Image 1 (spheres, rainbow, N blue to C red):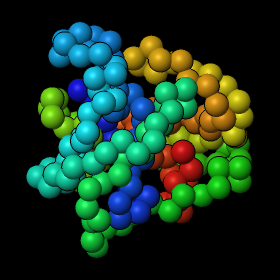
Image 2 (image 1 turned 30 degrees about the horizontal axis):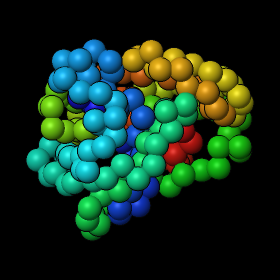
Image 3 (image 1 turned 120 degrees about the horizontal axis):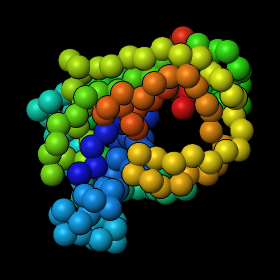
Length: 171
């Protein structure tokens, strides 16, 4: 459970969607778990580029904003991290790209992505930062200040970044 994409913001932290680290109610039933069982887990396993695995802890989460930050148990050396842009500077009709990574169903891997199979979907910002609510594919209502784009989210892309035409993270 907990399948999806993520991105590094520095050598120790990754950002993903909350629903990528919290299984749906169907998955909870299948594994015989409660939401609290998952939140009480001491570590998660993050798989990077297919074979490299590192343990991580849930550092922060917001179910209402559908965001989660994982702290890796070790710093990653020589990695490229995503530079984040101030989302209040994003404008309507600006070109953006949704990045994601196909995933495999692995009960022990929270976030699994491989650099060989990246999906890139282009689109535009249809609504700059504004208050709205939406529902995730697991039925969770999310509320907050979000950017809306025309990018189609491919399977496994949840939790991955949306970047501008300069490669800066905007959402």
